[in-house]
Amino acid sequence: MELVIGGMAAVGAGTFSNPLEVVKIRMQLQGELQAKGKYAVHYKNAFHAAYVIGSKDGLLALQKGLVPALWYQFVMNGARLGTYQIAEKQGWTRRKNGDGVHPLKSLTAGAISGIIGAVLGSPFYLIKTHLQSRANERSIAVGHQHAYKGLTQAMKHIYATQGILGLWRGSSSAIPRVAVASGVQMITFEKSLELVRDLQLFPQTSWLTAFCASLISGVFVSISMSPFDLIATRFYNQGVDAKGKGILYKSLFDCIRKIHLEEGFMGFYKGWTANYFRLGPHTLLLLVFWDRLKHHHKMYEQRASS
Figure 1 (cartoon, rainbow, N blue to C red):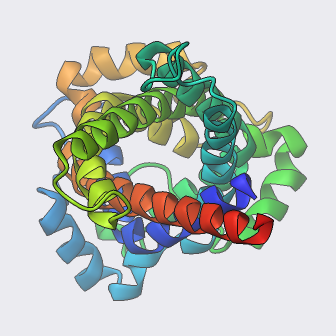
Figure 2: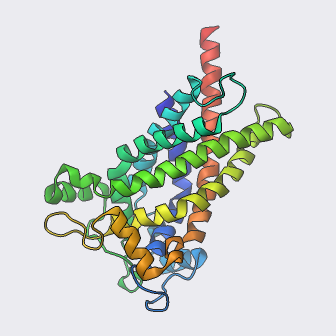
Figure 3: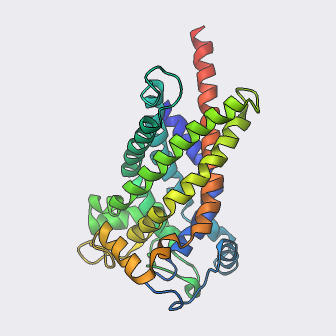
């Protein structure tokens, strides 16, 4: 049930945040391995990117990759939040006396649960990235353009050309991305919950407590995650040769080296504004949904046992 609760919360959040994910992917791929001023700027900022995609590709293009995106959210966050909730129930994230969250234990549990979720959800993240980077209008295309148009077609193509392991291509870049984001998200959300509850701003069971805590958590997640998120987007989206090997990047470290060499340090923060606007609402909705679903499940268990 912990896994289902986490998955349902993520699907609810992902439905609303997917258009911003499309915008973020396009901005992260713009000017790939090119110095500033050496490439055409199709997307000036998050708002301009949304306008350009909507006007050139059509409004529905802002929901590209929604099906694999929701599957990814359900599998990855179901495993991630579900595993963390189990650790939480066992008391593994709290201090020895049980009084309050232990920062290091919570951070570690969040990172480990994130790694588990990243590996399980990697095939869906791969296809989601491919579909969201694909432009209908060639004049605004950025990054490698993959030919398939849907989840089933993509899975068949990748399996036929690269085998079953091809569906996990790029997962080495997803592990640090989700581990960092999950570790930071869990500890900042838990500590923020404690802070808001101690201030007694709202009734103990009010959804506004989780709302305020998730607002605080979202800021820390967006700052810490952005470079890893860009690296994952580049690594997943690159084209492959006849042997299924990446054309641009041989490894995760090769990807980091080339981005830094060609685009400089700030290259890792391309699309940061889009990432911030996406992560803020997504983190907010995800953690509020998760907190509310956990609360209702706990109430159901109490009524069932009485």
